[in-house]
Structures are given as structure tokens and as C-alpha cells.
Length: 86
Length: 232
Image (cartoon, rainbow over all chains, first blue to last red):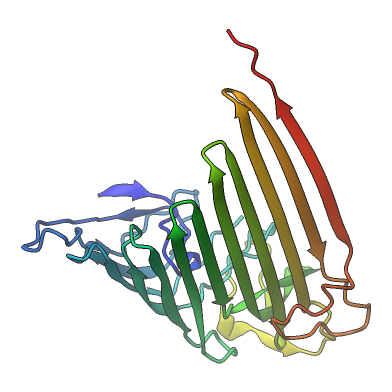
């Protein structure tokens, strides 16, 4: 687990708050496949506000094909919570 | 997805789910392409109906000759925001409205290596965007900054003066000539243009067409830079 800020995705606006992210990786049988990434809802706000930032899950994976082309998919859900107050 | 900026009052998050597909072909080929297509669904946000949004970012690169490269990129973006702050009405009352902005960017890049010491680069980008606000709502907090839930929003009557439409065009060309080792001459031409402002009292168009661009003010500049290296 490590603290990560501004996880950027193609739908970048979905992930915007400091959060704790678990980023497991494991070897795959296909050497061209990059480690998968999973993110779990483990919010601990770092701005001093004890507000729930919501629950979210994000999964990304990308594979390099023998032709040296890349294909990938990213999916996620972000539910509830409150915006970062200023 | 935005706090009531500067007030310290939290606002409920919009809830979304998304899926993005990514593709990049081998960039070492004479012609390559890449990009992603993403779709997202915003769930019901109190009185604001759910909606779809998405992004498309595609690019293609062609190298018909080792000295020539052309790259074209298109970016389309639609976001369906939930209610967001329009105005602080005072006394812990806030005016909010859902925003639906669309934007598009077309970019063309051209590189030509005439000789190893003489190169020509060109860049052109057309950007258009508009934003359409929906029904206005009033949200109420209190002195203790109680968070505002979407479900608590109350519709109010108000004239729409927040919509916007913008178009911008950027062009530039750079000629670089290293006529002697360490000594370089640059000639740069730039052109910047933005659409003529929408007249007061007129609702901006809800289109990605570059309306008003040619009537807008333009800025053209020609710059020369000469670097002369006379040895250590």
C-alpha cells in the first residue's frame, strides 16, 4: 500500500483526491502482458477534513502483442462521497 | 465534481462508472495509430437525470520517407457534470446548475528534415468548446458548513447567462538551420486567433463548429533568432 496522488486515467476527472492505493502485481504466463492493476476503496483524507471521499474501484490492464502493438482496457466505478472542501 | 469553491461547504460527489479501450500500434511502422475510446455513465444526481459522457482520443502518424513525418490527432470530450456552483447567494445559500460541456481538438504536426542541419516543423491546432447549463437549483447549508446533498436541491427560476462557446486556432512554423556546428538560425512564424466574442444577450451556440473564428482577432508574429558559436 502506498499513498498516491492524482491517479490519471483516460477519464481523468474521476480520480482526483489523495488516497491510498493497493497496486498488486503478479507474473503472468504471457511475457508481453504487463502487470494488472487494481485499486480498492481505502480512503483516508489527507486534507484535515473527516469527509468520506466516496468508494471507488478501478482496474487497468494493457498487453503488448507479438506484433508490438498494445491493447488495453480500463474500467472503474466511483460512488458517493463528498468533494474536497476548500 | 467540484466543491463549492472558496466556501468550505462540501458538495455531494456525482457517481460514475466508466470503460475505456486503448490501442497503440507499433510506432516503428511507416504508418501507425493509437488512442482510446472511453464511455462513462453518470448516475442520478438528485434532481438531475443520469447521462452518458465520453472521450475519444485518436492519432495517426505517417512516415512516407525517413525525412518526413505527419501526425494528425483528434480529441473529443463530453462531460456530464452534476450540479456545480454558479454563485454564492449569501446567507449559506448557493446557486447550482448541471453543466454539459463538449470540446474538440484537432492537431496536425508536420516535420521535414530537409538536410541533417536544416529542418522545418509545422503545427496547427483547432480547438472548439461549448458549455450548456441546465436547470438552476438552490442548495442550502448552514454556519457549520453542513454538506449539501443533491437530493436537497430546489429548482429556481433564473435566466441562463452562463453558457459559453469558444474557438481557437493556433499555427506555427519553425525553420531551423544549423549552418555551422553550434551556430543556428531560427525563423518562426506564429498565428493565433480566437472567435469573436458572443454578443451580450445572445445565447452562445451549442455546437463544436468553429463559428465566429474568422471574425475574431488574430495575432501574427514573425521571429528570427540567431545563435553564433565562435569556439571555446
